[in-house]
Figure 1 (cartoon, rainbow, N blue to C red):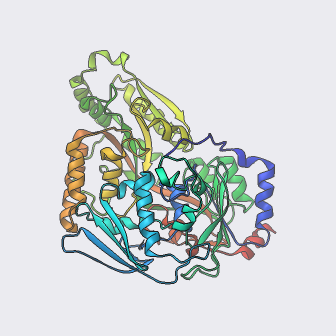
Figure 2: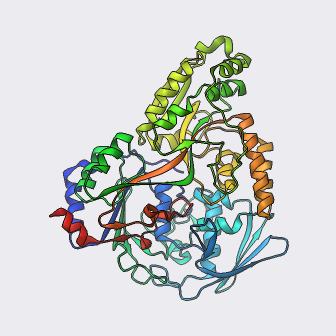
Figure 3: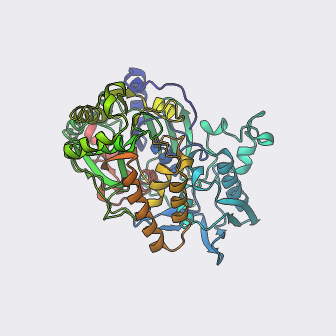
Length: 539
C-alpha cells in the first residue's frame, strides 16, 4: 500500500458535514457505514477491510463466495481445468455492461489479471508468480496458465475484480513506472471506478468518504429495497459515531468501538449490536529480526507470560485463539498447541534467552492501532504481564496510516505491532500465506519479518496441493510449526461487532447469514433499507 496523507478522523464532527448528512437523507434510501481509513478503490491496490467492502460493491468477479465457504458462478457461467491443473478456462456470460455502457469481455478479464500482477499491490500476492499467462481466446472465453498447481485458485478469484480495459487505458498518465502503460491508470482509479458492479462511484473524497450510487443497469437482480446510495465514511471516533447513530445518519457502525461504546450505542432506541465470527484473529506480531524479539526463547517467554483470560475478558463474546488460524475455520488444526499464562514456564524460557542478563537494555516497543481504542487496554495489560517476568514494555499509540507505513521496512517496524487479520479467501491457506510468507513481509499483515525459506516452501507446497483433504493436512502442520517458532502471540479469535439501525435496516449478516470472506457482508444489493421507518423514528 502507498503512502497517503494524514486523515483527520474526527473531521465528521464538524457542523458542515453533519448538515451534509442530513440533507442527503431527505427522500433517499441511504446506507452509511463507518470504517478505519484509508480506502483504496483500485482493484490492483486495495486489500484492507474498507477497500474490500468498496470493491465488492463496485466491481464484479468471475465467481462469488457463498455462505458455506464455497464459490458459485458470477461473471463466469462455467469453467474447466486441465488434467495437470495448470490451465483454467472460463466461459463468460454475455451482455454484462460496465458502468460506461460497454460490454465486459474476456479481454477485460485478462487485462485485469495482468494489471493486478504487474502492479503487485493489494491482492496481487494471490496470483503473482502463479498466473504466468492470461489470454482471451475469444470474446467470451478467457484462459489462465499457472506456473504450478494451485489448490485454492478458483476460490481466490473472488479477489480478481474485473476492470474496464478501455476505460483504464483512456485514463493512464505518462510517464509512469509501467513503461508504455504509464501509471496503469492508478491515479484515475484513486477516485473513479471502471467496474460493472451493482454500485458505481459517485463521489470520492480521499480523506473523508466514498459515495456510491446504485447501478440502474446492473445485470443481476438488486432488491427493490436495497439502498439507492451507499456511503463509506472515514471515522471510528466514538463521539461522532454516537452522534450520527442517534440522529439516524449512520446505518452501520465500524467494528472498532470500545466495550463502553457498544453499551452506549445499544441503549439507543432502534439500535442493535450484532456480532459474528469471520475467521479473523487478533495477533501480537513480533519482529523476528529485531532485538530482543529476534530470540525465540524471549518470544516464548512473552507468550507464556500473557494473561489470555484477562485479554478475552476485554472483548466479551470472543475466545482465546487456538493458534494462527481461527477455530473451526476450514483447515484449522484442532490439535495445535495452545499457550496459557504460566509464569514459571515464562521465566524458564527467559533464562534461555541471550538477553536474560541485560533485560534493562532491551525494552520491547508495542505499537497499537489508535483507531481501535480497546487495543490500549490490551497493551496496558500486556505491559503489566511482562513486568511480572522483568521485561520492560513501552506502548505507542499509532494511527493506522502510520502503522501501514512503518511496517513496510524492517528498520521502521517495531518489536510488536498489533493487528486484526481476516482471511481473504475461505480456508486456512489465506491466513497462513498472508501472515507468514516472505512475499507479504513488507505489508501491514506481517510485522514478523520471518523471511524463512522453509516456511515459504511449506506454504507453497500446501497451496499447490489440489486434493482438499491433503491440502488441509498440510495446513495443520504449518500451524504446528508456527506455534513451535512463536513469531506471534495468538490473542483471540475476532468477534466482528457492529451497531446497526435494526428498526429500519435488514442486514443478512446480522441475522446469521455470514459470508466468510472479508468485505462481502457489505454487498449492499442484499441489504434492505426502509427510509419510511427511519422517518418514523425521527418524529
